[in-house]
Image (cartoon, rainbow, N blue to C red; front, top):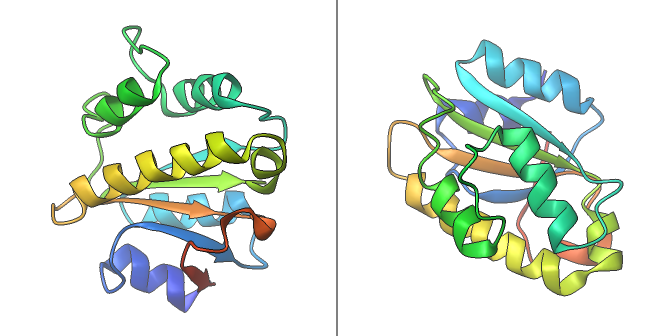
Length: 149
């Protein structure tokens, strides 16, 4: 499928938050990760207009426990736990259509990216890393490193 994705899933590329440019579908990327022992989640970003919508979508997508506080601190705490989402090799969050939140609520996107980076760093040196791939990001996240797959 993708040499870059294979390298990422094998641990040859450091876990983190990346813009992802690929002609492969989100479903195909998620399936490839699952076959490699990773737990994958796909966040549909087309309708995300603000922080509340993003936090709700993340809670639904990742299956957060009922005690989710629906704020930035709670999001980071939950992303540093993930005990309800067991995995063999790691977690892959694929956030599709990131540009929509960037256009509607750029500050909320910036904070969300900081939280995701912190969570990825927390898991980075473990046997079960967290990586976030941002698809269709547009200009909203130019500072995020780019991977092509």
